Image (cartoon, rainbow, N blue to C red; front, side, top):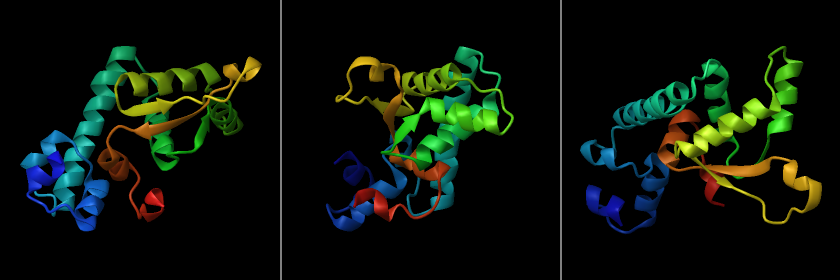
Length: 157
């Protein structure tokens, strides 16, 4: 409702589609949401601020490139299980020294910064609890769309 009020839009399928495209960051109220270059610039600025101030500086991250790539990987795999073990294995196969604990920590930092929300599995028991196969969702769909451009029509099926 706030999105509709900010932009004086009717409650319609087109307005919902616009919301899914640009997200709901409060700062968008100062932007023209029909100017996607301006919107994406604002969203990228917010993303970079979160990444730098809330994650990199707070946790003294040195592998910023991997962190950025991990964020983009999560953005491109919304609703799918993310395996820290699989990511670490892939990175080692490509010659990068990335451990499972590093991947888990980076995902935790992203969650603590409210960039993504973690959806833990409820159906696991025993030793499976130690596996990290959670799903992650972006707190703001607009930032996610800015990071991974392209059609996201399948996201609402």
